[in-house]
Length: 593
Image (cartoon, one colour):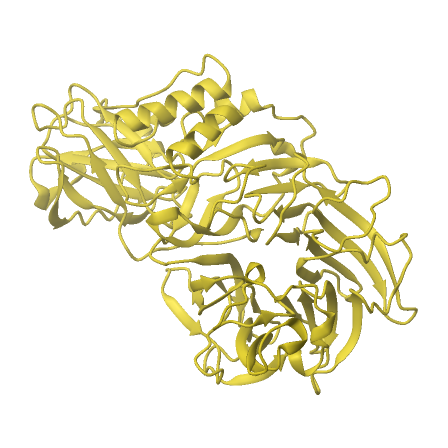
């Protein structure tokens, strides 16, 4: 690993030509937040996708370069919809988004039968729980499996959990109102209890393999939730006494469960559903060897065994109500790693990770231990994510929304994970064009993107007078390196032709996909496939003396100041031109014209 630290100014120089997704001025970020009603965002010319604009408080790229390359988030975009989102871990530019849903949570890359899939939950939510579906999508973004709850009187899969197990099954949380005598809390005798639990289902057949409910095993009187509207109690929704929010299947087949409203973790037997042990809460069975700091978690989320012998657990400790004294350490939310011994029945603090901005997360949150030892944390209602090194240094501190203010509905970072992914969409690359006064390629600007494609290294451009023959090599004008989600190419004053098309190229200049043909006179697509099957590589063109100079230039922004100035300039430029970004080095190939 390189030891040199990459400053934000250097990062500015590297990313000035990419999508406008990074800011380092909190004031400017907050201004965008207000302008977009709590959802800082950017739009594009070649796509209807809406992408977030991030505030980067700190980022030492030398500390994240060995982390898995993609970042996965389930996101809501205000009134513009919701869906899974994949970011490039090198620059936080958008790789993929599907924004057709009402709500989406915890998208991530998971494996079934040796094949990697993108998984996410989508549906509708109410106070503290939800009803929806667990989607499993292949590398072409085709829906492979759609899983939901079985036999729960119309209740569907809840949003808190969707895990693929080592048995290639799907586990998700469930919520269901059941009749309950609520007089002990001041309610009616024929009231309701919001029971929660989980199901394990075979995704291929939707066969129910295991079903568990908290009310069968835990005393409702131990809840830290209150019988009040503030905890979701209405005439049609009961007290959520347990509030399950994560489940993990162990190698032995048992289930590690987190209960927010009891403030505990429990291991559930796969034989009969009984609790095998309880960690934390009012009746913890473990001796805390760290003066209470290993077991004083409350309102926690995302509990996971992370080692082969299943004795080390990570979780996100919201550290909410009913938290005891914290000694010299502030009682703040934290990422938490603890070591347990189920023979000696002891628990010990290993690491705790506090937010560098000293914020709390009243709800949601997640922790992921990465293969390189780094730790990725999501901060729930404090909408951002922070990556730490194994020894606790802040490697990356990023905001998706404002911190330190009242929560904006649907603005959150529930879980944020890193992982590997290969996306090969079946839809073609997209183009947007600026119509020129002459309606030709002269001085035209072309915007290029391909939502979900991960292997694109550069773009090949074709410009000609006949859309039916646009793929002819006589029309090939050159290549431009892919930058961010949307790449911008500026065609020079000597460019000729009314129609344009592009080919997405991999690192070896092989064609991955080709766009429709676009009319530079109307700014609209022509219903003609470009049929571009090959291009002349940069290396071939350089050694081919029969090819001359191309007619494509490239639009560049000079980095003359701080990253703040560059990013803000790019953002305001995008707004004036209704989209597009400024892109990097142009590699010419020849033309015999």
